[in-house]
Length: 69
Length: 481
Image 1 (cartoon, chains in turn purple, green):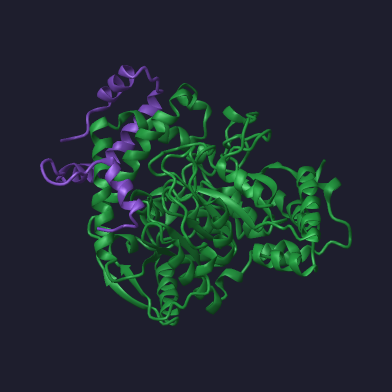
Image 2 (image 1 turned 135 degrees about the vertical axis):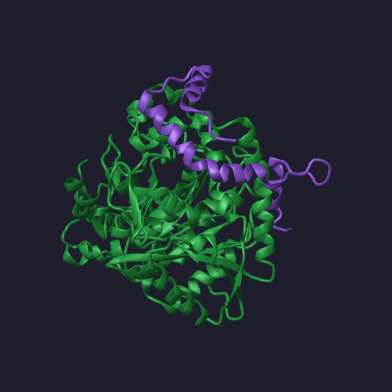
C-alpha cells in the first residue's frame, strides 16, 4: 500500500489538533516515505494469534530472564 | 564562583585530570592525591578546554569543591565510599535537586527539579563529586546544532560533531574535564559519542539503571549508563547506579556479584559471534579495514570469532523508530505547539511523530521478541556478539548531518543507527570501546551481550584494553595545551 498523499497527512494532523507548517508537513511526509519500504516489510512479518503469547511484555520477560529463548 | 575564582593554585597536579576514576581512587587511598586536588585539576581542565568544545551547560565549581573537601575528610577518616571524591558529570536531562536541568532546551532553561533522579542520588550517595551538568542534543533527540546552548565540538576535530545525544559527556570525558559521565541511549546516544570521542561507554541492559528522574524520549528504548576512559571505570560506575528502584517498574533486580569482579576474568577460550550482514554494511572502507585489525587483536586474546547471521536485523531500526516516534509524541505532547522553537533535528523528528499509527506501533512492540529470539539463536554457544562501533567518521557539524561511508553519503542517523538501534530494540547490553584510528580520529568496536550479562562484556573489554592502547590515546589538543 502506498504512503498516503501529503493532503491526507494534513488531515491526520488536524484530527489530532496538531499544527504543522507546510514545510514541516512536507518534511514529515518525506521521512515516512523513506521508512515506508522497511515498514511494509515489518507489516508483512507474521505475528501469532493462536500459538504463543507475543505481547509487549514478552520482550520484557526475555530481558528479565537473561535472554533465554 | 567563576571558573577562574575556583581555579587551582600552582601546586595543583593537573595530570590528575588525565587519571581514570580507578586511578584516582588508588591515589586517594594511598594518600598521594586528594579529592580536592582532583576536583581542582578538573576545573582547571575545564577552564583550559571548554571554550573550544562547549561541553558544559552548568558548572558547579563551588558546590563541587565543598563536596570534595567532605570527601577529603572521609578518606582521612577511613570512611570513604565507592566513588569517594571522584568528579563526574551528568547529561543535562538527568534531574538534580535545586540544580537547573535544562534538557538542552530553551523550554527548560530555568527548570529546577525538586528531587534527584535515582541514578544521580546513587552517585552522590557513593561519594561522587558532581562537577557539571553536561550538554545534550535537545531533549536527547535534537541535533548537533543546539540553538539554545550552541553546538558541542569534537575534541579530536572541532569541525566534527561529538555525536549525540550525550554530546557534552563525550567531549568532557575525552578532554579530562571529568573522568566519568552519565549518558543516555535511545538509539545509540551513549555509544555514538563514546565512539566518536574515543571513549569507553556502555548501554546496559534495559532496566539495569532506573530511569526515574531522567527526561524520557521513548520508555521502551531509553537506557542510562556510564561513559568513561576505560572499561574498569564503566564497571565501577555501573556498580553504583544499577539496581532496582520502586520508582521505575522496569528496573531489574540486582546481580549477586559486582560488575567490577568480572574485570580480571580470563577470556581465553571465549567465543564471540560476528554478523557480517546488515550491521557491517555501508562501512567506510578505512573504518572497515581498521575493524578487521581490531578483530585480529580480539582473537589474539584467545577468543574464537565465528560468523552468524541476523537476517531480520535490517528491519530493527525501522521497528525502533516506529516505537520512538509513537512514544516521543506521547512524552512530548505538551511541547508540540512549540515545535518551531526547537532545534531543527528535534523539530523534524517530533514533526514526523503524529503519522505513526497505533497499529504499526503495537506491531513494532510485538516484533521485539522476534529480534530478541533471532539474537538468542545466533548467540547460542557464544559468549558475546561483536560489531563495529561506528561505520563512518563523525560528520561535520551541520543542522542536517551527512556521514561519508566512502564515496557515498548517508544521513548520519541512518549510518549510526545501523550498529546501535537494533540493541535498543532488543534491550541487550552493548559496550563500545576504542579500537583504532583513521585520519586522526578514534574508531570503535562494540561488544553485545545477553541481557543481564554486562559482566562478560566487561571481562572481554578489560582484557582487550590490557592488550591494546587504543583507549589511552587522547585528543591532540591536550598535548598542545
